[in-house]
Image: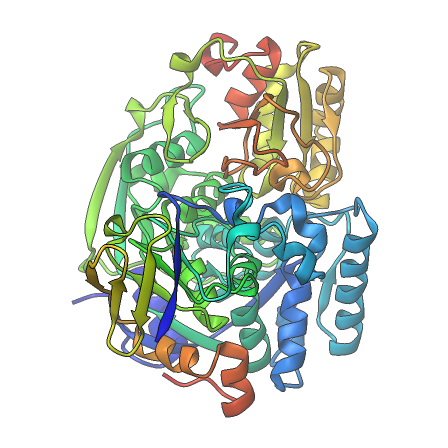
Length: 164
Length: 417
């Protein structure tokens, strides 16, 4: 069971919003890079976010670049899951590959600052502030296996191969 | 039922009868990274325990995004890539060689290949009939180590393109128009497959421009059949033997069909800050710009420089605009020198950058100041993309960019042709 506060963002949060290309020189210095997480969408996010919190987006979350650093800095910030109405393909796969769940649900019903409780196994989100209960779509089988191992590289370390 | 191009390629490479929606393990024919995603890929590869590359001669590390490097930390990332290339035996493409996607289509990708790159614009090689798609560092590391990865076979949209382009209108206007029509997430998880008489007549340069931007509609791939034009292109690159004819079956199943008559298209521009925020260049007439960028993996080819030189010949860009031109590869630069385009462009006031990504992603070579606007031939205009969230990026064709450089304002190229 995951529990934390919702940080709400709008539609079309791009990989440049999440971690701008102008910080590419920090990509081999992850603690420094992570200080700029979501900076171009909310300049204070890195200061506000607490371990276990949720990033809540709208449509097409994570569109743009293939930079795995985008989900990586969100993970380093302590975020336990991303909730969005829809997610861009590469971002979705990258997040799962890092062991960071992306849950597709109707985020219109969640307000900024709401306290959420997510049950990954049951596929439910409980908004403890509003009392609203949501369900999220199933993560495809192969991705669930990767997620359950903590990501793609831990999966490969354990199995030495990839199977579907 | 027959197969789409995506189903055909993924069937062959997975040894299964792959249909849209299936999850398959497919052989990867080419895996590559660039200098902003490569260091993480190398670290993921090294920690994975896979040990050796599956095929070192089909693994390429490109130094193109920050080339030459603007600072010590990126220079150190370049050292990491050079060291890994030496240790692993894989191919290194150095500073000044050009943009990964340009060199991939000039040198490596073959029709029917599965290509994965740690860069979202890997889709460019779909222009020659390769199933090419962008992935993150971990996924490309796995493809490098195992020579394969898992793929969900995408549903395909059939994009039926007919008619003849008007003067001053081309492939870039077509793809901007399409993205404006279906939206920045209109094709998420799907493949765009391009058909029709206008596609058959389209040059390879135009096909690469269109395929390059498929990802801006969310697509996993942008695919063209490999035909006689593809064969001629591969012959001109000295690799005619890499050709094989590949096309979707006539009775393939598509999720939907989108029809576009290119004769009705006009010069099109994406406005800040999303690619699907399109308008006609003529309707933005008078919008002031301080920078014009011509180049990148979208429009840095010889044909693009020819169009640009054609418009700028004997004229001068206005003093209020910095006209920055980056040929996509060393080969393109040499050809543009031979044709006299570079002289024309320099005389018109252009700044010629070394082959590479240039200022497209805000790392160097032309970051924008507060409140400044740029007309770029690149593929992405997200807020902050060119180094400053307080700046504004418009996307257009080389013709629109060249015309706008002459006026210092967004200009319909037909006004100056």
